[in-house]
Every structure is written in structure tokens, then in C-alpha cells.
Image (cartoon, rainbow, N blue to C red; front, side, top):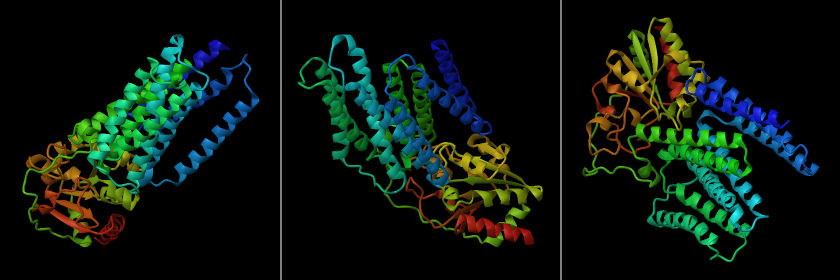
Amino acid sequence: MEIIIKVGYLIAAVSFILGLKYMSSPKKAKTGNLIAAMGMVLAVALTFFTPIGHSIPTTNLIIMLVAIAAGTIVGKRYSDKVQMTGMPQLVSLFNATGGGCAMLLGLVEANPMEPRPEILSMQILLIAGLITGAIAFTGSIIAERKLAGKVKDYRTMGVVFSARILLVLMILLPVVYFFGLIPLGFAPFMYFLAFLAMIYGVLFVLPIGGADMPVVISLLNSITGIATAFTGLVYGNKVMIAGGIFVGAAGIFLTLLMCTAMNRSLMKVLAGKFKKSSGTGTEEEQEIKEISVAETALSLSYAQKVAIIPGYGLAVAQAQHVCGQLQQMLEKRDCEVDYIIHPVAGRMPGHMNVLLAEANVDYASLKEMDEGNENMSQYDTVLVIGANDVVNPAAENKPDSPVYGMPIIRAHESKQVIVMKRSMGKGYAGVQNDLFGLDNCSILFGDAKASLQEIINQLKLI
């Protein structure tokens, strides 16, 4: 039986690797997710066979089964109800449960222990898993609340200074404790550390701006993976170790890639800092050219090549299905339509890809930013739907702009740009978009879903 369990764990670990590999392609992501999920089901099932030959209370097994059933039901209900705009919040909330689990395991395992040299390494692992899990737990909850607009940014020196003090304490206290200078049992000490780590998780996320929450969620997800790996080392569970390492490594890489896409260092993101303008603080007056639905439809009807640049506004308006219908209508008129996706479009990596996949948009129509920029001058019309900072030319030609240096989609290099917006509100960076004042740019005001539907109706008459 032991050989079967080990082979099963190996298969589960391989399924995680295959799942990650497949998820690197939008076309195979669904299959990858299914493969990884099957591996996780196998790992959980094998867990029930591991204690065979040992005396395990029936009550414990019943509690485990009830917990699995409850988690499955709650998770299914949440995933069914959530809108695409709320997907980042759901990811953050689920990540919080993983961190909380790692923290609770550390507290449970600490109860029968006392500091002894022969179990020092295990206790160090328990402390590491508890601290990282507790930080991910409360940090992910605050991130979810920020994304939902329920918690504001607190960029005060008091919050930042308090977080730094707590971080130093969490590093030093275990060292002092193992030298016997803190008169506490191991379990009470672990509860104290958990309390400090949970507070630190809150203070860690509070100063960070809402625009940086996707980066923070990715980082917290990585921390949860690291906590899982620490817990796996405590139990000697190879699947937990492998899964934790995969999640931790993937989360770190994704975090760094997102920072690169925004041209910001990870330290500046974590410090809640955004580049300040070196100018006078005044903005240039722009001459905005408004365009009507009928004019937009006419322009699209004559276009041979159209690019659609989606942003979070597309998700908010739930306009992906209507956008897909517009694409089909234009293609029937022998117009080539591409979607150009910025790496940080939406509220999390892949947000736009998933949104468009929901509307059955062909993956072949999705172009990465670099490929779109190479061919930008060939597009007769570029339709920007709900995107702002990712198409701001100031990122390339204004060194004093907060977004300067951030890679952008160069929509301004096309023949004509039509930006769909509810109002002249600014993007997450809070800066004026120089694109709106250019000669080849026009603004179509209104709800994206309603405007797209009206454009389709107008095209039917042309």
C-alpha cells in the first residue's frame, strides 16, 4: 500500500506540472486546470489511505469528510455567482483560506510540543509556515476588500513604520525564544506569533494602492505556496512540498513580470509609492473630439483592419458578448479584427483573455502587446474599450509623468482611434491621458455595452 501511495503522490505532482504547462496557453488553459484539479483530487484521496494501520479516531475522519463537502459546496456557490469583474476578489479570498489553513496547521501541531534540540528543525518549519500563512490570510482579506472598494489606502508613515517594526519582531522573537529568553510554552508562543503575523498582514497591504492589488494578490499567492511547502516539510508530504514550491515560484515570477509590465520595482509597489511628477502639477488643456455612434459605425464599415483594445471598463460593462458580435459582423464584411491585450489589462493577468473566451472569441484573434505595436500603423481603426493608462502616450514621451517608462499599446500610431468611455475620468494612475487630445483620436461617451449594441444596429443599416 505504501508503494501505491508514493506512486499516486508522484502522479499528482506530475499533474501539477502539466497543469501549469498547459495554463501558459489560453487555448489549453482549461485542460491544464482540469489536469491539475484531477491531481489534487488524487492527492486528497490518497491522504485517507495514508493512516491505514494506525489508530485514527472515526470522529476525525467524519470531520474531514464534512469539511471537504462543505468546502466543495461553498466554493461551487461562490464560483457560480461571481461576475468576471469580481474574479480577482474571489481569487484573493480563496488565497486567504489557503494561508489560514497553513496558520491553523502550525497552531495545531504546536500544542503537544515543547522546545527541545532534537525537534528544533521541525519547530522552525512550523514557525515559518505559521508566519507566512498568517500574513497571506489577513493580507489577502484586505486585498479583497480593497478590490471591492470597501477599504481605502492608508499611506501614512505610522502604518508603514508599524509594519516594519512587526516584521523585525517576527524575525527576532523566534531566535530569542530558542535561546530560552522568553518564558512561554511553545504553543502560547506560536499563538502570539500568529497574532503578530496577522496584524502585519493587514499593515502590509493597507498602504498599497488599489491599482497595485493584482501584484499584491500574486505575491500573497506566492506566500501561501511557500507556507504550504513549509507545512509539507513538517508532515513529510511530497505533494504538499511540490505543490507549494510550484505555486510559490510561479507567483514570484508572475509578480515580477507584472512589475516589469508597469515599469515599477516590486519594492516601490510594496511601499505604496507611485512616481511623482516633477512638473508644476498643472495639466495641459486638451481639445476633445466627441464622436457619435452613427459616425463610429460608418468608420468601422469602411475599415479593412480593426484593432480592439479591451480594458477593465469592458468587464465592468459586461460588454464582452456584444463585442464578440461586433467582431463577427465586421469579419462578415471582410474586415480583419484583432484584439490587442496588454499584460496588466483588467485586474489580474489573463483577465481579458478569460473575459473574451467567455464570449467565444477565437484565440487566434488575440494578439500580445508587442505584436500589436509592430503592426499598429496598418490598422484603419482602433477601438479602445475601457482601457486608459495602457494606451497613454505620456508613458513614452513625458519623462515627468507617473506612468513614464511603462510599456503601452501604441494606439496613437494607428490611422484612427475611437475611445469608448463613460466620462472623462482618469485611469488608476490618476493622470491625464494624452491620447485623448491627439488629432486622430475621438471619444464615444456612454456605457460600453449599450454603445456597442447601437453600433451593431447602425451597421445593419449600412
